[in-house]
Amino acid sequence: MTDLTSPIISIEPLIDFKSIKLNDIEQSRRLFHGRGHAYKGLEHINIDWLPPVALITLYKEEDKNNLDLIAELLKSQLPDCRSIQVQYRCRHMSPFEILWGEEITELVVEESGLKYQLRLGATQNTGFFLDMVNGHDWVRQHAQGKRVLNLFSYTCAFSVVAIAGGAEHVLNIDISKAALSRGRDNHRLNQQDIKRVAFEGVDIFKSFSRIKKRGPYDLLICDPPSLQKGSVNIERDYKKIIRRIPEFMNPGSLLMLCLNSPDFGEDFLLDTVSQECAECVFKERIAAPDVFREAVPGKGLKVLVFEYMCND
Image: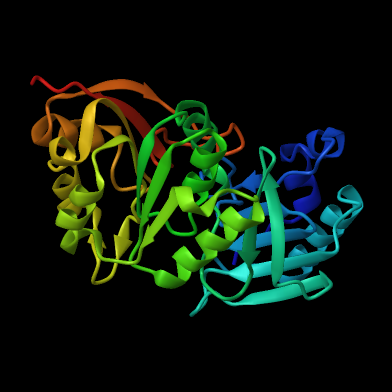
């Protein structure tokens, strides 16, 4: 078991509490990112601020006294905090535990002025990924007038930001109908025109003809899980999507390709695109927020933008 000795001394200087207090509207954010292995002895701890909940995520068991000390730190620095919870990703079914305060399982968080529903304890993931804030902002800035294809949409955060950015239409594809239902609620929460959004609860790899029929599209967002048993294997399946780009996309369309696996770096995406659709030209990479510091570059989230330059 890791001995933090004094987690307040270890963690407090690494959390930018001041920036949260100075925000006119409190936003959700990662407070501490130990999973990047940049902080020795703290590799198993993440801390998120999901107002009014502070969520500690553990990937390895931690001493209860140390957790209580971290909770005291969070209470002292987050005056609006009403609940401090722990999710044990190191345990079967990733259970939640309340360290202090209220039992809050349903909440609405904000990012860049947009709202999202979260449910704590129902699934392993909250339904919202804080490392993608820069990717969300990029889509919002580039969605004006575009028809958007959002693959592996989950609870449709990219769809919400695309509509906020003026997208003409968004098609969300995900195998989970429950996740899409939450995505529909996220659009309504932001008072967006649901007529400009479609939801398809299907297996992407069995639905290429349906996706093509609804196209062509001007902006592709592809953010697959690294490994989803019985459904997705990145190494095997990403190329199946890339090679369909000429069928799905308009000439000059933009492609945001995401990868969140420590086992594959940027080269995997660049090589796959080069081999399967050479008409796609690399444009830029979108970095995660600074708090998501990685000891080894390329282990965390990768987001690359390409342009489909059709030769026809």
